[in-house]
Amino acid sequence: MPTTKLTGEILVAAIEGFEAQKRRIDGQIAELRQMLDGGRPKPAITAEPQKRKRRKMSAAGRKAISEATKKRWAAFHAAKEAPKPAVAKKVARKKAAKKAVKSAPVKLVKKTAVKKKAASAPAAAAPVVTQ
Image (cartoon, rainbow, N blue to C red):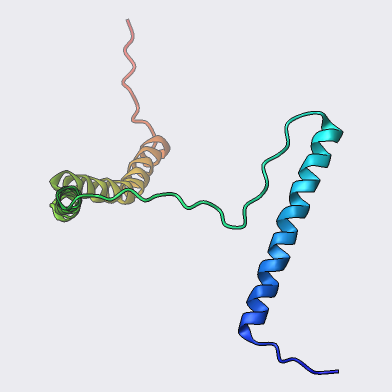
């Protein structure tokens, strides 16, 4: 028995033969399904999915999009770096309010101490007036 070498040409021919057999078998399967279902045969699945065509953009379109994006980013960064005076006033008010709260208990304690002293002091004798 002679031994044959498997060359590239022989392998390519074998692949093509098997693919032809596969297509023939897929066609027969589709016919049988049609007989079984009584409806239309389902389309055979192709080996390669169809690629979507990409739309090409003109240079002017790309430039317009680029300029609009740069303008948006410039506005964003300008707004981010702009000083906000309203916030500074608000912070100052909060600091003043915190100071007032901290000093309030001290004032309250002093006032209550004065009231307690006044209440505990003996009342001056009122002159009795007789008629």
